[in-house]
Length: 319
Image (cartoon, rainbow, N blue to C red; front, side):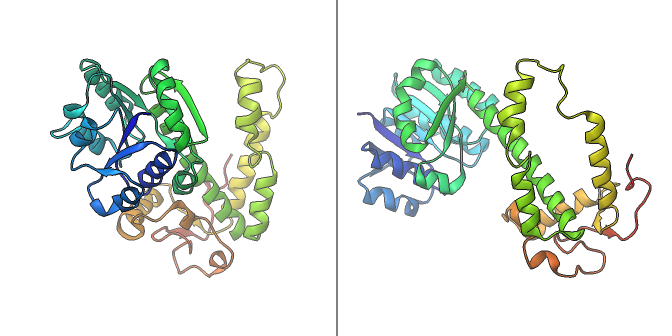
């Protein structure tokens, strides 16, 4: 059985490393905070003082790091993985990083005979703890086959997306789509609650309807878009325009964020940077009780710094 190195034992990396150890693999671990390794050392893992030392003691090295800067430093910097990896070793980056960077790492490592896979994960901390993550892998198919049994200890939805960098691209696209949907949900929930619908009822309505059932991803794209079956129209754009316009006009009748000149977006950035810190998107969604509080003058009552208007302009009234 391969000896596994793991670098980065934070909120995601720590549970993933523990699951690999529970699958019976011998582990060598490191983190910039040694105390983060205590659970793994209690499981029998060996501590290493640097990424180089981890690589020297491992056949396959995993990293789970905050972003491209950390990945580049650990993979290519002084005392990094490349300095310790032997020919035939494999490096797998589980971070959500940069496709350009992982492709550059792949090229440099290939000259030393070291394989590289990018394998960002999706499912959050609960998924990391339970081993129920999607693992989106980019890289050589044979190399993927070699590493997949270990990835199966990390996630229950392991898939090869394509060549090197494709796992990262797929993860970034997922996060972009997810971020847009979350913002739309926050805006829609806010509008609906302010227009008089109870948040619990509105959530239930969205969940039971087409969007909440995931029809775009589960039916429309695979059954209509991919095969190019556009002759039969399921939902005319004119109807979509009518519905969006009606929603826009409904929103104009309740206090709303003013983003005509980017003021709302600027206020949001300022709020996140100066007040919310690492707070999650959930703060923007109206909850029972919180959404019913009367907003302070000039604010929407939910997001700090967002100005509102009490009267509609011509732009608010939509098409």
